[in-house]
Image 1 (cartoon, rainbow, N blue to C red):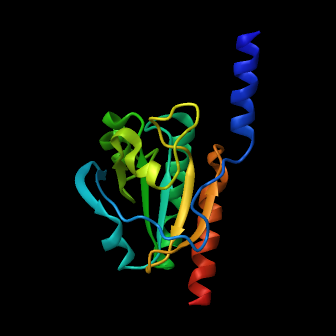
Image 2: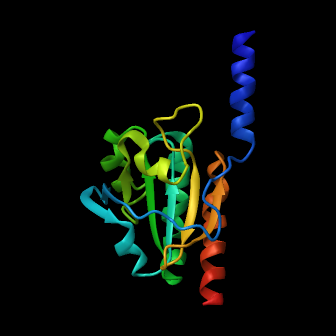
Length: 179
């Protein structure tokens, strides 16, 4: 019976959208994080990235898992569209950090097209209230679009990775046309 209840709870979590605490109009916290792009180590600064234009910050539960690999590939494939809109993309995870360097360069994942950053202990995810309920030391799947002034333009939270790119790209394009 416990197994059935646990499975039903997990299914409900996966089927319904999570609620991102930060909403449009909220101030997005700045952070600096260690990460990788194309297998090379880097330091990512949210404040520096915002100076270049809007930032798409997407949290994903764990490196090198089926859903996260799909989402990374979708973001990588859409990078020309994000770049054309002047947006920077950064993926952040608190799960399976030892695999970040590998996925950052993998042609079936990020393809080196955008940085992925480590969030040990989910400290950044907590600032954005993007912690996975079932595994509080891992990030939830939440995507934000943040304006150069640090204001959240768009937030989308759902464990299903398939709509995060279209949601954030639409928000970036809308921001660009209003600007």
